[in-house]
Image (cartoon, rainbow, N blue to C red; front, top):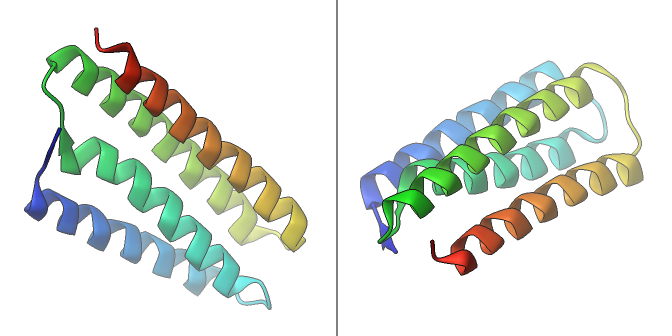
Length: 114
């Protein structure tokens, strides 16, 4: 596994800008929670897409595809949450389940070594 520093910085910047966009659309008491959680989710998924390269090309392709799908899912759920008022427990549970599912699938792909 190799980390590409420049692409990681780009993934960080893109995630920060998207999280700021969510903040600008949603002004409520939960806006800081929305920004922090969406930044973490988007950065983690874009880091797997852009910033990492694995020894096996098949593993790299599978991890990038899975992370790209979860990036889109994270974007859709955070867009929905940014347009409607929500409760903190619902937001944390939905996003927590999504991020843990993403990490579990990527971890399983990395352990398969095919």
